[in-house]
Image (cartoon, rainbow, N blue to C red; front, top):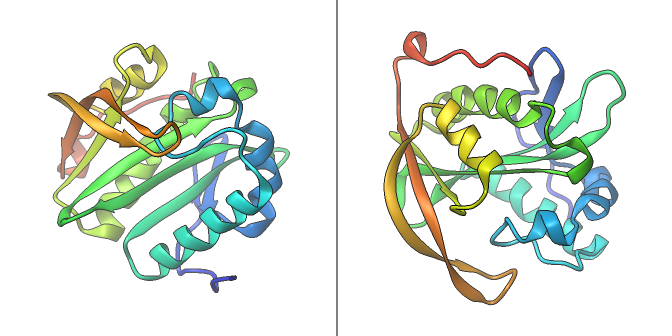
Length: 192
């Protein structure tokens, strides 16, 4: 199933373009989904196949068209390479909360791309989804992801358990939250 392009803006940062996921992104997403990346994600299993990627893209595009999700690929501006994924989706049973999820392929980690993408994403998630808060769940030993939520100014809520369909089990995570801010007061995060 192909869903018409949702009316989502392309978000540009100094080095990146964040745009709605499209079927043409499937092969890049499959190529980047390694064991190392998947073990940090609740719902992206390995092996990750092209049909799985196409199904996910169709599903998130439908959710975007319904205003339930802002599913974006992270693309490097100079060469158009897909580097990873970032999304905000309404929390089940709570229309006032969006869940922030993100990942980069291994080759693209350690360059400050996600800090740059996440900063731009939260501004748009608050504006487009009209939610009161963004939340993120992070594995306690995931230093890179912990750095992103801290740089975004997200405050810790505590430890919790989440269902991880990629591994068929519950796992512990740390929850973080960012209340809808006064945009002028948001911290500035420069590209690394």
